[in-house]
Length: 302
Length: 314
Image 1 (cartoon, rainbow over the protein chains, first blue to last red):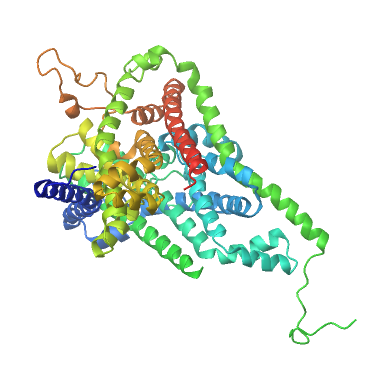
Image 2 (image 1 turned 180 degrees about the vertical axis):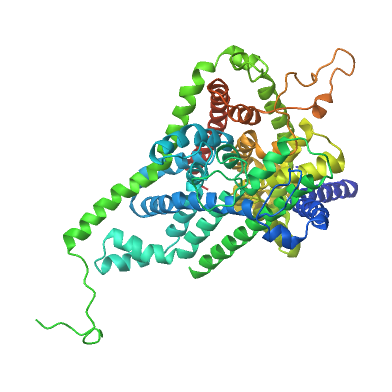
């Protein structure tokens, strides 16, 4: 028979419980501190930057040369590089990811799915620096045989490899959305004599639209923030062009390039990487919120 | 033959579908196309591994692991890189794992549904989508210059710990959520306190799931390059950090926390950005070591989760 606890023991236990709960609560708030820290640092350093460079110039000037003797700070070329490499990535990941999701959700047997899904997941476990190596020294030489005159650094190869990297995100999230479509819709379609493919394309896909769109948007967000692949394979030269065959720096590649050198703390080029970082943060945040909103919408339907 | 009028106005041509045979042929074609599209990723992974092995395997030897980087490609090695990776990961794990698991426990077991909890939850899912290089900027502005922790192993480990925090929190929460309430109620009914229930019953039951998240987080940290470049990891390091064991009392030194460092992915990046096949071979070899480590860890995590799903029959 267990002995009864004395009042002092009870109090001790109660205090211990409270201390533990407070400690756990502090741990949970640490994530908010991280976000706060990020926003603070980006705003603080960017504010110093924008004291010297007007926001309008930053957003509209078409030349980005912070490290030159005559520096100019127009973010357009970097945005352009980010846009092009992201579009190339999307051109690879969207059709492949969508087809793979349709296949895995509607056609593949459970055995095939059990094998393929985890293996696809491995793709997102490969370090990005290794993908960069792959893009520069494997994909680019192959592309150079197909596209004549392709330079050693180009956004095409970097974009393709980013696309391969985000296939698992796009495929797996799209598949989740498709599997969430009620079986009744499929059964009704089969009952009307539709084939599996017709049901998949004309019933399941439309019903899963917002989930699939959310998957795409999340993929875009990943591609926009991808750093090492573009820094290694697309070059670090800002270049205002929409031609994916050309080399160009992205926002992320620029930050890497500047960080590799040893910039004095507090100098304008030092602050410029925070301004670029703020731009990147806002871009990905917008995409993430959009994706979140899309997903919340499709959850409501069923 | 009289067709039943189902409301299609006269004069509007009815949409005809393709003959049945063709519809079935399309179906068969898609089965092949779909499988091929699904396999593209796997083929790419295979090509990547083959490419790394083809250029990197000849460089892998004991010397490669025991030599410092060098200007001469054929005698350069990854000693400082793998030691640096190991130490950084130690710091990352020591900070990130307890913090993430504790946060996960709080959100799932303790938190009441209120505004603050909501903010924390939205915040965690947002943090998971922040590009890794942004964490590097946070570390550069706040840790390196703000708190003065320097371009050190400690700064790097802390940065990566914050980076993998959302991964560990999300995994911990999912694992804890899968533990049935009957287990908690049984323990509470016997007079256990909330923390006793959590520590002695919920956490052990959730352990495989938590472990899966921890492994995936660690593997992610191991492969991260961009945030460490931003805080100024050196790309050429020909020395080892201060040894953790000293000959004088207290025999243990934490001086290594404040030493400069390099890590495997940065060493690989340094080599890949140099011209010349010799250094590229080194990059491939370092990349091969890195990819085998991270894929190995991911494989363990995926296997753990698979076993878990088979076993979990509450």
